[in-house]
Image 1 (cartoon, rainbow, N blue to C red):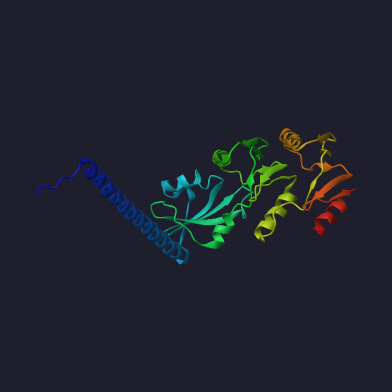
Image 2 (tube, rainbow, N blue to C red):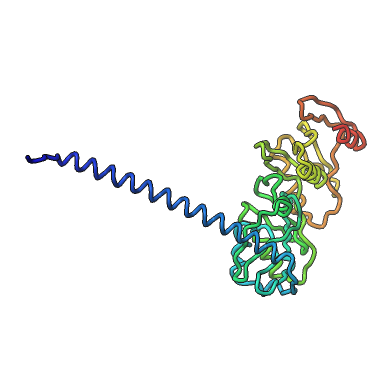
Length: 288
């Protein structure tokens, strides 16, 4: 007796076989990758702990393996190495710092293998120090120690500051961030930080796990008297850039813009109040 099997049935069976085979291979590959990543992370954690407790010798930052440079053009483009230490036969512990005020702390540590691979660090304390409390709304500006200014138009431009110090190796004074700046918080809201006091307040709330929104915002229009007695009117948020432009044009200025009173303020809950002087402004912040 002949058994007749149609070509269509053979074709469907073949498709089913290859589909099942592909699924099994994908699952095995995913499991293999996941396991290898887990092993690598575990190995990195052990290596970091060994480096951290081992006796170390100081090495020049310029003597770090060439491969370490990659991390300072990618994940840590806003950071620079301050000092480096070698644990013989293990790897490197590197102290880093940043001029990026969005990070929770100015300094932290990272670890590299002997060949310059950045080790995956699971230490919560160090991760918190590198945590970003907010994102800058670009562009932002910095006044350098020689009174020139550098404008960053994206996060990739942080390397411009490091390059400036590479060409000025004897300079130790860090750059000044030009205020006001706009920042985007984790909840998606945008805040205008008028001066460093407001920025420090946001970062302090970040460290304490509190609401990072400002206590209150100015109700526009407002005006500011500058160090040269000129007055800048801020009728809408975009006008705050006029204060930055004045600061860039006057890099030696040391007196921050004076807010002209009275002004109205709006609290987080939508209520408003009138502030008549600097003392009342500080009292309003304390009341928050």
